[in-house]
Length: 412
Image 1 (cartoon, rainbow, N blue to C red):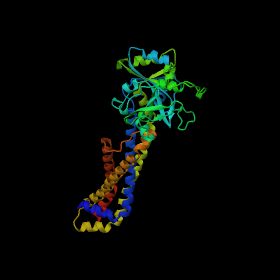
Image 2: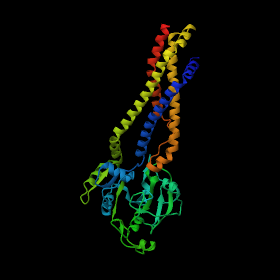
Image 3: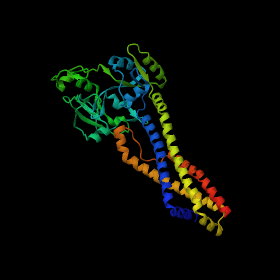
Image 4: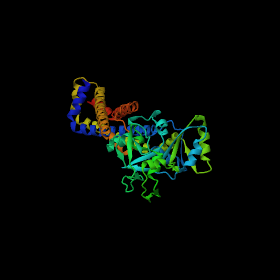
């Protein structure tokens, strides 16, 4: 009876109730969206690479090295000589190494030059290895393996020809179209920057730059693929490399020896430590967004409370009628609290549904443009606690109009 009466009371004041419901829906949407996207983004960044003990690059900031080597964001300050790579990886404590060469692109997507060890040792998430959706890893000089998003977005399939561009600009006029690559593999989706990357061999990178100097093609050689395969295509330098060590206990020992490497200024970072530094840097932004969301929710709660408080004056006859039929004062208190609860519950339902619909529709865009996978399912333990907090907060705020109604009932 109480619920039916509360619902009918809200319907009688549907204009103000709808505005309160709209404000509550928007506030729940914003609060859930900020929290969900914050946690999902953090998980995405944390799961981009796993099992890597050290990342080595030219001396720069820890975060900059992490961003360009793992997330393909930004550019390196310098390259590392191949001799340096060989000297460091010859350490008996190094179990495996993955060299990385960046600098070329294809229609806005980064090209990664590496070795076959990349497909064997690179992992993401909870040490998940890369898997092929189609084809296999590169074997020949001009083979290319595409990330899932590159293949889907550009419509490539096995056997297609791909011409790389010099530099990382979305639109480039310096093309390596005289030596196209053939698609031999397409990786399964990972939800990481791997999906937005084209993978070629280090020798393939050297081959397309064999007649280039300082970013400019200086000669048009007539070397065929068979001719190039006979040429020494050992890279002179690489961008960075990842290391897996035979013992976790040796991590700091190897890191110190690399940082003290005398022949070239290089730095070794721990991916986990660099990620923590990154999140500390953007912690202020996170907290600011959360604060804004909370303020929006508080404003919505106060709006609901104000609407209920203002309705007390309009409900004098309703209160007198309830008192005549024998309803105690606390009945009106519970009635107003239930009205606030109904508005909040319906606002939570609409806000959560709207958020899931928006995330589902924008999921592909976020992955394609930003390399961030945001799950559309927001029904997690954390969001459950958040919704419970929203409901409890609305009940607390509704105490003010409920007490006012209680006093009016006692006076009548």
